[in-house]
Image 1: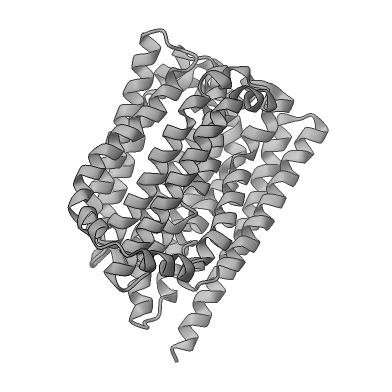
Image 2: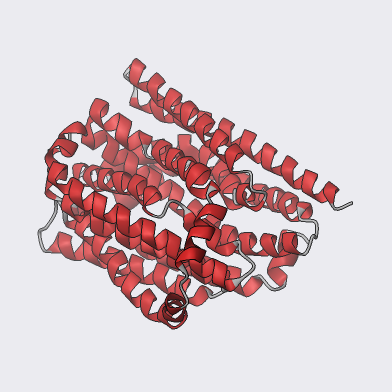
Length: 424
């Protein structure tokens, strides 16, 4: 069965729900940016993205990546225990982050962003909200409940976009966007919890601490290898913000952060929908001992046939398009996106199928590829820092990232072919 056949069968409604919700959510989030760029200064975007970059790294630690394992067990009781393993980690890490608030000023000085100290107290709330949603999200995926996922995505982006506009109109310019990105997921999480309580509350009554310990041990590859892999990936992904800010300043990084947002958001929208549906379907095929290679080959070929012509066309218009949408001073963001296109293309292919590391329990290899990717990304940025050329740093970062992801895709496809051959 190819990817089109998959989407015409049992996966079509799930894929359509997730993709449409992602599209609506991201359009809502993006449509306000022509207004926001005229309200907030580039330094405000730089501060927001520094907060989000630090938060993204801490979110990786918050559940030890156990939420990925919620989909894997055959028995429901085992999945419940995995869920609560992740919940215990989340509570412990949130407490530790709350204790770190007393060091807000030294942390802000480390990143040469004194204003960060005024808003770091919200970091525990943000990390808890996002970590709890990761657990709920994969709980819904396991049970093929895609409507709550769609509602969360749309509500969070509506609240975040509305909050940013409201704060801007109210004159809360420096930290207004940070307040919005923290409060929005908290409200959406509460609403989502109301939907999940019917299944989670009975599961809480059935909790077996012995079972929790057994599942924590059984899926120890996730904290041992998936956690470092995700941590390295997230740290490397945030490296342009974390590394370039001390050398080139908040304004330059503000232009870059918006470029990353505008460039990666559409790719992430499509990727998340494909990933979630294909992950669940692939596990079903593996449990039934059926071949899966044709699905992935067809996906890569059909996706490439669409993306490459679109990206070639975008290459010629991006600077003018961003200047028209956001204002003349933001044309440089379009220049950055142009050099990000190779990375974005390969990233869509790789991120849509990188659950294969977990399907085949090859988390050690996943960690290896993430370390290789991080080294190449840092090397690319260091070339630009050494040359004192911000644009060169972005070009090298994108090119080196694309090379590393191509190697990862080839390896994953070889594993799929080996699995198919093992079936005879």
